[in-house]
Length: 554
Image (tube, rainbow, N blue to C red; front, side, top):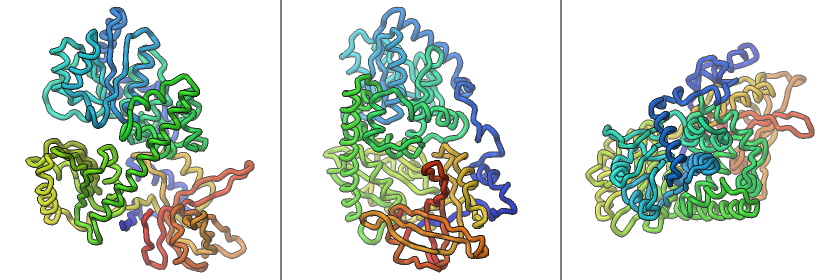
């Protein structure tokens, strides 16, 4: 299993005498200078499309073309994507245009039937199904759909592209207007674009920003900071039912959105019908919202079971001595969970991982990688064996002819053995700083809370404290969780304070910890409130005892 290397981001040890430096340290560790805009971000209304780098002329062209479509009552199709960002951007554009007089219908591609993005064959199917179609509007895709847009133009369609992905290729896109920014999610971009006419739902923009793992700085921080309370109080009956049935606790935070709500919506796009996710977001009927929320939970449970089964098969393939790069392949893998399998293998073994669904003629794969190994570039070196490959440094998708699979695996391992440095095959805990026991208090937890919302580009602060153990116990029916009582033995007995620390999923460590032990602890402090009384809890991320690394599987 993977071991985590502890990586201190600063040598400064923070105690009572230099506590005023802590906020600066946290900002500096995130690549930020001392900036009031971080702690007090401006409302998204203060930003414009120009601030996002969107071409002003393209914006005006898009508005003019939409005005023309409404005046002429032309048929419009929104072509979205099968993830939360695609669902949200489609919902925002469809609702605001449909309820203000446009003749517009949404279309979300099915992962297996249609594949990703706008393709020439999809354009033909839509034109055949809607012969009076005049305008195609892509959201969360389209920026690199050169052939499909050309085909749409040949069929007499006008095309508006609204996308946030990296443009691939240097040729011109033949769209009538391109609304493009890599700064925000597609849902965030749609929110800004629609603001010209309407007051779109900022809560949905926050949902897409978190779900699409956008860096929570600048405009994205503003979208989430101001959108999250709106999302928590949403009037959308489908989301309200989903919050209730999924067991969401309020106040709503980025963790619950990213790890409870988003997976349930994404499950529709992974293994079921993506249009049901859109229906959940948009329905105005309580009973329908309840049905769709229940369906979201059922589909997500099915997705989880498929991942567990897939991981079990993968572990059997990997065996006791994993290669520098992991490759698991099975004809029964569902294409919608390949990325989840490869991500779990990465976490478990701290090395690049590829999961491949073996097809009769074509096989499909998804890859995840550790920091320092650009998996997309690595796969591109075997491009002669692949049909398609795309992605970024840490994640990639690819396809290949099944008859080439064995050769691909052999060549991949040959490259890995000669070029992957063993020292890169470790995961890191990035630690903001070491702290003394004299600053482990409610003030530390309040500063931590002020750094929220947390996410990509702004992780929860993580502190290293060396403490003495006063008590050890396990919690949970299966004793799966760890509870410690800790104190600072450098503090005189009469001034000594004791701290509660919880480690979820760390119950097995209790057997190796005894009262009186010295413990190195990585933790995030949080305030728990009960009957208007605030108490401090330290949430454990990792432990080291007596200079010996404990098992770190969590």
